[in-house]
Length: 632
Picture 1 (tube, helix red, strand yellow):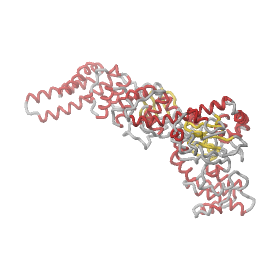
Picture 2 (spheres, rainbow, N blue to C red; picture 1 turned 60 degrees about the vertical axis):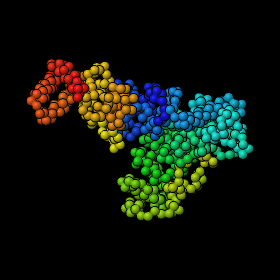
Picture 3 (tube, rainbow, N blue to C red; picture 1 turned 180 degrees about the vertical axis):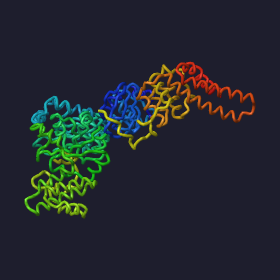
Picture 4 (cartoon, helix red, strand yellow; picture 1 turned 30 degrees about the vertical axis):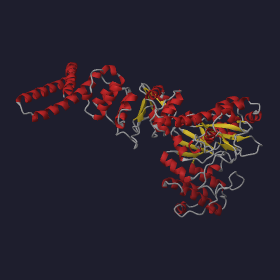
């Protein structure tokens, strides 16, 4: 793994597990613990319990469990070292590596991220104070961007020069290129990637600056938007969403994310009091984006593109995402030709209504076709119905298809029986499925691309395109063998729970030999050596899951009741062993010894059931069992 154990321990002890999980799902206090809807498997009611005191979590739904490091591994899809590094960066903890090669590789990637962060500050300060950024400041003010907003999103200005950033950063040619901040030109000189552009820094979901989107000023030559090159080692446009880090709390709280085309649309939504918008960065919406949003509990996605661009989504992907990720994907019905950024300034209430009343994806597409059609003639109504049926045919659910066929038949005044027959007929050619207008919109091929097009951001790399309720049952993703909500704690489990939460009350009163189950025995041994988070590293996945499950629930059992239960189970096992020995005994003295021991154990076990004699029985029985194991 390569990181010193002492540094890993410091990272674990510094991590705020409640805050970390709270970045991905709503967390509420429940007694000494906290409860949340598990973001690792998606659910409607909370079944994840978090113990900040012990630094562990456990989900009673999917049985996933662990500590802060484990959670980041699961939620971010990184390896152990990557999760440790992410937490170390968050809490300012320097790391030491046991392998110099691995350390150098990881340190270089970290240095590239830091270089992008320095570039963010360089461009930001240039916008705020540079003598050459007056026109950029004026442009932003005209768009309603005051100083507070500029600082919140760290908007910057790339000077109209060849190498000012390169000279400021003093990076090697390789690091300059791999960071995406510049390159070596044909003359052999370092050159900045961006010049004369308003800079929108792009942060990943962890808050690391990884790239930029640069907008040219109105009236200037060149593509409207330019993004960090895909050759940059720290930037992957298919796995990053502009605004996600800034708006993650709003997304988690609402359980909804709004997908925009451009950076200014994202900011416009926030200014209108809707801080849950994100934007793709010069690429089509990908499944990685969907997975990323699900990690922040976004169960509803609202597409907020202009009227024509929204029709360019590939329907089969949308329906597949809805089914696989249990999503509700809708479209905000924005006024034609009006960007969300403009609507946020002119009619913020209208923007809110567009989101609140967003329509299901298929309903929106059908509505566009029928709204654009001439329904005053028989021919027009039939053509419109046929075009709408082509859209309905793409949906995988027969029940959904039939409901929309009824709506189409009603609006187009055609026979629903005929539509039901035609929905199973072969598809007509794209040219025959016009349906949508091809007039003066920004995308005149919207109807032609309605099935195979992509959702594009206005910026690209090389060119511009303008209560908690009842638990809802275990998940099929259970990983540890089933220590879930329906799992009943044994006396051995209760004893381990006492070791975790009130170790002083059972100190010297428990021993490894008292645990008959191998998983429980290994948990006892690990707890005798280390605290919960470190003990989990010593265990099998199943035993570690049991440990985490016990750690998030302090319980309220009496110590003597628990010890009596453990002692009774251990005594019963011992009696069975002695009875087997008795059958094989060859001398009368041995048989008498075994018979006496069995009778004594049975009497002690009976005394455990009486509260007046329980304490005396425990004081004799547990030491006897421990001593017998030591002698053996």
